[in-house]
Length: 299
Image (cartoon, rainbow, N blue to C red):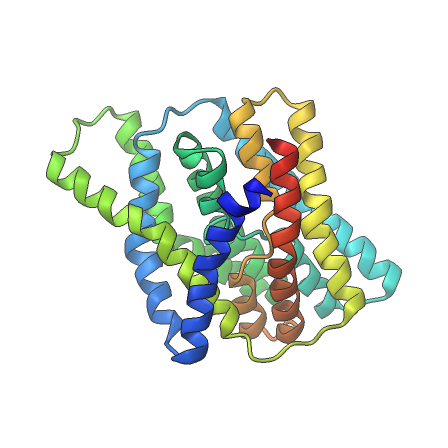
């Protein structure tokens, strides 16, 4: 109960503030999203990765993210064959089970539970997840050759990608430290990213106006995302020699609900957008209970 009061409840309260604001006074979430994507997130990524001590844990994170995603794809395809789902429903299930909310939701949970020392790992996961989302998310939403071209283009348009590359170069070439004024400015802007992303998630959830609750699909996707995914993470960290802090981050991030950005792709490519929105909302609500249980297990 103490973990719920100390970690989950404060985070949900911030989400709720964004949700209530959007319901009372409808705002353009895209404007806030643009500020987050092009200013706040790149600063957060650069300041954390440029000061991180890169080791084998980062390669393990990349391997884990790819393994988890393709297992989710395999399970989704298996369920689609068993229940005879259409291609669009199968794609919707892949979108909602394969991509977790590692940014808006995952970062604050890791920060509040594991601590600031784990933040570089969580930020790195967010960058990898964003790249996968922009590539595989577009591919499975469009299921076309043009989708692959667009997916590659999306990755190249991501400011966080360039911020990560610049941070790697900064460390690799041993560039001299930035002046304190520049460093403090980047830190201040980066520190604003997490609370703004939390408020934005609440606003995004409030912007969901229509739901298509096919409970067979919703239940399947939510169980994959909220139950199977963390179980796979537990098995992975048990089999691989991983630093305990990194292991905790992987398990926590794997248990995050569906990323809200998947709804954007579903709408853009007409891949069961109402169904994807419903799974995202249901998964986010259920995560209050599942994450509380998970955090108690980890602790």
